[in-house]
Length: 250
Image (cartoon, rainbow, N blue to C red):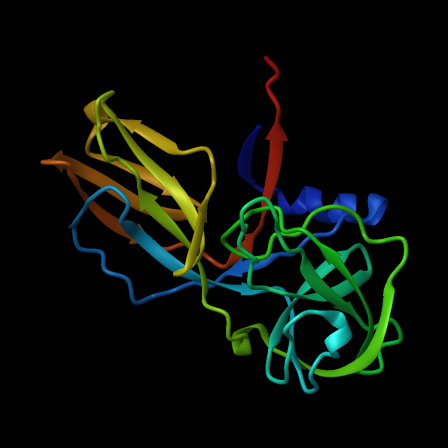
């Protein structure tokens, strides 16, 4: 079994949501201005550029979740917006790690009558096993009732999760004359990566590369490190990922 992680086409995602009600959680890249444009040396695994991700919407709980829910959600916790067409839920954003052969699904709360209280819920597995909230699948046919939980809406800037998207140099052993960059995302404690890398030939250096709207120049490679300068950071834009799984039978 092999998983591949792709950047999701946001336009396609919103169009299909109105047809089949697939679940999705969209994040936004936050622009920055205080980045260095000077040439710096980067080893494999170091981030050339890192910017914050904020959710498309978020809420803060003003009441503890009932014990029956079996989710550790308490006053002050922030939940992230997930949508399926016009339907919306707010889900816990910390991705549950895989333990042995078991894995816990993400809990999503729903306010069906828009009265400021969540009165139902459902659970869905995150598409990625680490990183950040990346929901998939369809909206459930039936929601499960719970004791109402009060909440208040907050702005994405007030969201207290520390998530990011980064451009990472991935060369550890450059034996094929290829310089590779990869898009990483998640938090300091849990990082995932887009499967496909962005590659350039060592013979092309110096070369300008554009990744997610950011512009950087790879100048030269020496002793396993690369000299890189950044001319433009990533602009504000939606960011989402999709995961496909393939199976090989022997």
